[in-house]
Length: 110
Length: 115
Image (cartoon, rainbow over all chains, first blue to last red; front, side, top):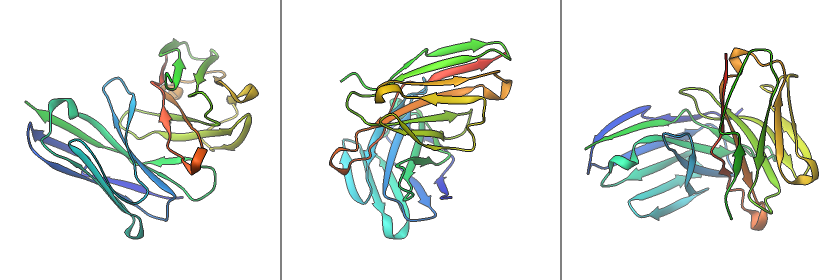
């Protein structure tokens, strides 16, 4: 099945710093989502981005489907950005399920 | 629209007991998924419903696990004869499928601890 790899696995930043999280996937996908998992376990939708670039405040994402990767940019990081960021890809198998990466654990220090 | 709702939020059970979790998807979402997440890992797909039809089951879903979605509305996930290895966060998600969108929205999860 499709493999999803995220890097880096762990990231520590000072408040105000910028960062780039990467998601590589091993096969063609129909869609891609980025999520932020908060300390209580809730997965918060960040981007639904099968291709192209989207921006939402301090966050933006770019997916280059032909090269099988997606990037999540966080600018001017805040302590509330801490948590785990997951990339999930929708396989082309026809059942619309999402396959998740292992996540990037981000800690932003005040 | 209140989002995907899961109940209970936490469940502690003794090994060998049966447990049942409930998921209420976003209204009018016809696709519903169950995932399991263990510590330090990403969520893993368990099963998928299109309306009331269960269309895919992962091999992670052993014969002790059963899921239903009667009338295509809420769904239940039952685990029989629980084992310590079943301890995990169980997540439910739904998507509408309307306009070709497959964006999935997740509930808060049910955290199961088997002692």
